[in-house]
Length: 108
Image 1 (spheres, rainbow, N blue to C red):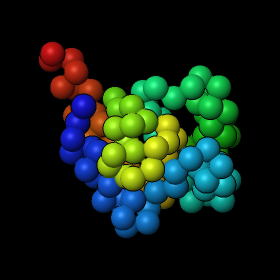
Image 2 (spheres, rainbow, N blue to C red):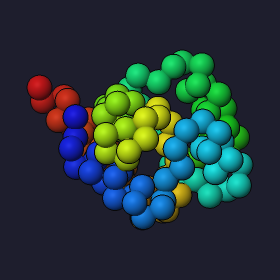
Image 3 (cartoon, rainbow, N blue to C red):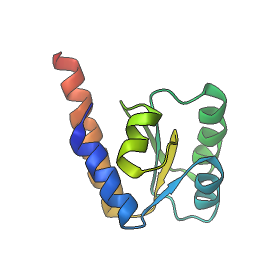
């Protein structure tokens, strides 16, 4: 797991740039404020499918990160499998960090 990614999620949360949880993320997507939606590695298929339908409609990029709900919860102080990033610059950095995380997985 990429500790930089989890630390950056914590920073984004403290900056007020994350929506956390199904209802909050759904509202953020529908209001046009979501730049990126993240899914934990252990999210339920049902929840992921519901949110993916919304992201497809509103054309929002999604990433399934290599972190469990508990790992995410430790970094943002709220356990959830669905997170919306509201700031474009935070979203860009999270995309880069998640790509780095996937590269690390390939080398193991």
